[in-house]
Image (cartoon, rainbow, N blue to C red; front, side):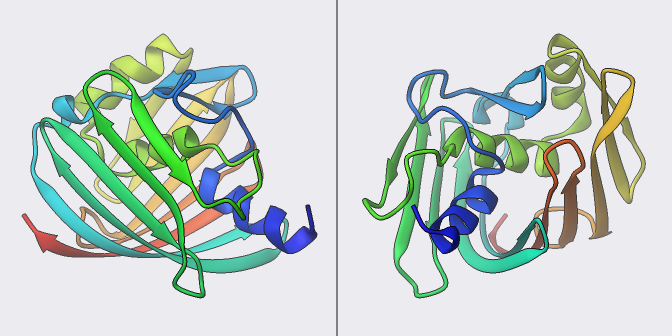
Length: 189
């Protein structure tokens, strides 16, 4: 695997981990912190959003596009690389998410970590708090920031320029050393 492919895979995945469907609804959000991703049914919302995501891992950046459609019954995500090629498709209907990765993506891509980042960014606090507590983590939140602590340390910080699905956010995973700058456009409420 060359450096460019590795750098593409890490931001898309959040971090290197297991592929779906095995443990598809859980992801490590920090070392020793396994987060069970709350399902779309707990969001209890219908939303469609287009996103431009600028990822940085170890000082090397890349940009990718994503489209996410969520109803209480399902979540569908399509991620495109900078050339417009479909890199990853994730469908979550029922208990476990299912992912299809492009053959050119490295094996270490973890769609579960991408889903975890989406949940941490957008799921309501009332849904996130119990899931994070079960993982041994805790959430502190204001209208413009979410901070997640695990093992006595800050592991993730999310700052919102404009909160919500149609806004801008910066997720910094301090534990794994990556950041995602997300600009979202709401397509349907």
